[in-house]
Structures are given as structure tokens and as C-alpha cells.
Image (cartoon, rainbow, N blue to C red; front, side):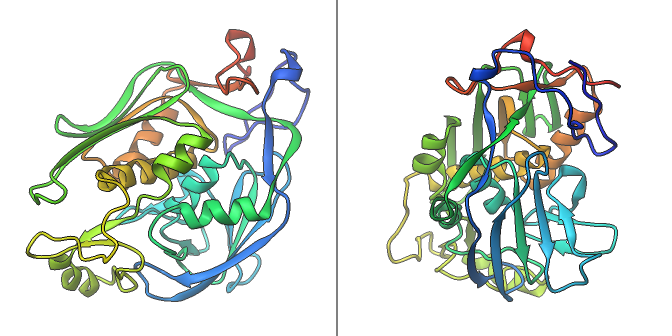
Amino acid sequence: MRLERSEHGELRRGHQPAVANRRIQRQKTLKRAIHCSGIGLHSGAKVSLSLAPAEADSGITFIRTDLPAAQGAIRADYRSVVDTKMCTVIGNEHGARVGTVEHLMAALAGCEIDNALVQINGPEVPAMDGSAEPFVFLVECAGIIEQAAPRRAIEVLRPVSTGSDDCYASLAPASGTILSFEIDFANPVVARQEICVALSQDAFKSEISRARTFGFERDVHALRAQGLARGGSLENAVVISGDNKVLNEDGLRFEDEFVRHKVLDSVGDLYLAGGLICGAYRGVRAGHRLNNQLLRTLFADSRAWTYTWLDSVTGLPLGETSRVAVSA
């Protein structure tokens, strides 16, 4: 089998893979549409959002319903990223934008949703509680169905990295999807934290999805002066006071909630690759900018990656015979 890669990197529809067909993972979408509303973390604007089923091989597409139909579609893709200051913002050639996509993208990745329409009537995904858990709940309420098409993943073949010695993001070959992250803040509440997670649906839901975004009380005024954090509150973020206390009444959900949230952000940022990445990701004091640069570095080197099919039992690449031949 040989498939052609389109100008956007998708595989064109064609023959089904001739490898252990019964064990190949199939793509998934939502069973039905579901809705929510909330406040944008940075814009402070009230926004309504719907998640809806989408056809196989269509990926994740955001649609700004408050804009003309011909201008509102934005593909969830690393090449669509137009800003990474404090969040990940995607946009299109018409100037349409959607910000803070990373928490929703992380939930879709964690729930193994390959195809979905995200209809939104404003410029920012609602913050909800500052984590991905509400979006996981929405997906579970909507239900998940398998589609006929095989699920494609991106297998890392060679190490790639971006950043500096003490602030970087990297990918390396690995069996499965592994994410490790290290943060180091002068603030004693956060301090130095490190975590390593082998990504699966269960691990994402129990260990990562509930971790909330965080910030410092001292930074609020400056951020709002820059048009950021206007919707931030104790309802959608962990806030650390000037005297080094967590202001949220219920405290932390995990002792290391801060670094867990950085993993959550990275899961969402990396899902803009257009599929699950099979490899070992490591972030050291990294953020949205480095995560996007990492994907651009990976895909710029055709020797560093390949498309592959996934085993429906193990979730791992099916091996050399599963690698999808893609024309240059």
C-alpha cells in the first residue's frame, strides 16, 4: 500500500492497511453533539461551545460560529498556531482566532477522539475549572463511537529538541507515549517538581486531567494590563498569594498539581500534530512556544518521524510492517 500526503500532511483516502487488520485501532468520534458555556480565562468573555461528531480522516476543526461561514473554520494543527503567549492560539488566513485550545485538545487526546467539530461563538475556549476534566466529562456524556478508518499515529524515529540547556522540549523514540516534565520556581509553594507519565486513557483521566492552571496573585495586575487573565478567578485557576499560600479554599488536587498541569498543556499542544505521537516527550521549564517549535522541528526532518498504525490491544505501533508508506 502507498498513500500520498496532501499539502496539509493528511493521508489521502485509499486502500486499507494490509497488516493484521483486526488488530488495528480505529478512529473515533463523538456519538452525539454536546454543549457547554463559560468564561474565557484571558478574554473574560462569555462563550458557548459545542462538540460534534465529524467524518473519519477529518481531524479536529474549530468553527467560529460568530463569523461568516467562509471565514470561521480553523484546523487544529501546529501550523495554525499564531500565538503562544500564556496559551496556545490557532488562527486562519482570514484572521479568525481561537485561544486557549490546549485544555480541550488535551481532553480530546486523552479520550482518543480523532475527529470532531468544535463550534464556538467567541475567540477563546471557556476556561471551565482551569483543567481538562470538564471537557473529558463532556466527551463521556456525548459518548464515543469507532469509525471504519484506521487510526494513524506519528512515530518518532530520531531525537529532536528545541530550546536551551536549562529550558527545552524534546522528543525521542520510545515504546508508547511517555511524557516527563520538570519545573523549577523560586516560589516555595511550587518549587521544583518533576513527573513522568505513560499516557493512556486511564492515566490521563486519573493523573492529569484534573490538574488546574495556576498563577501568582502578584502577576494579576500586570497580566490584565496586557489583556490577559481577565477571566481568571479562584473558580478556574490555582492562585498563590504574596505570602506564599494557595488561596483556593479547597487547596490543591494533587501535591504536585503544578507540574501535572504542565503535562496536561503539553498533551494538548502535541495533539496539534494531527494525531497521537508515539515517543518520549520531555519538557524542562518549557511552555506553549517551545512545544510548537518542537513540532515544527520534528516535521521539518522527514527522517525523524513516520506515520504508523496502532495495535488495538496494546495501543503501540504494530511494528515495521505497520508503517504507512507516504510519498515525498
